[in-house]
Length: 56
Image (cartoon, rainbow, N blue to C red; front, side, top):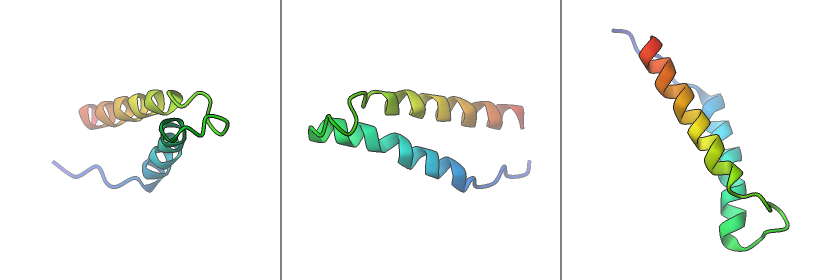
């Protein structure tokens, strides 16, 4: 079985997803009033990675 490989773009998406959650928890609501959206992005990324592994 060959390895799937590292995807730096996924790390970038994870960084973008964590910012609204971080701002929300720090109380900087004006920067990210919908901080919970970051959690949804994490679920989408996880689903993509799991599907990619299973289909490989």
